[in-house]
Amino acid sequence: MENNRIKIISLLILLSYRAFGEDESFLILGKKIILERNIDNVLITKNCKNCIAIRALEIALTSVKNISPQAIHHGANPGAINCELNFKGELVSGVNLTKRNRRIKFCLFKDNSLIHASALQ
Image 1 (cartoon, rainbow, N blue to C red):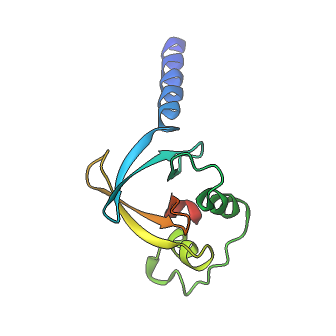
Image 2 (image 1 turned 30 degrees about the vertical axis):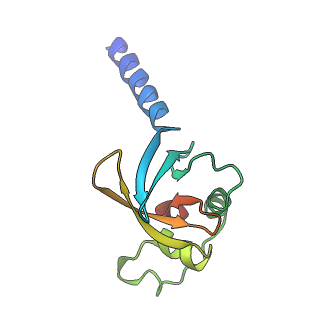
């Protein structure tokens, strides 16, 4: 029993480690773009160290969002609304080329950095 528990824990650690830093290819606005999962498992522009996307994520994780209830009326994604209203980004759609046909909304910033829109909610 204890041996099985150790195996399960080891497997979970391995799986969580594989997700972090893994590259995924997307077709966005007609271009193939490589994104990576950061330590929080958020898809973001590869090697984004001081880009707008990482700064937006830091702000989204640490501050209260100013999104009116009317803006999220009818089930709109709060991260997508936050992208456009509070971070002045553009909402774009991407098709995952690594995991076929998986479509994701991204926030595109003026420095061309991208982040999964849901991370901004």
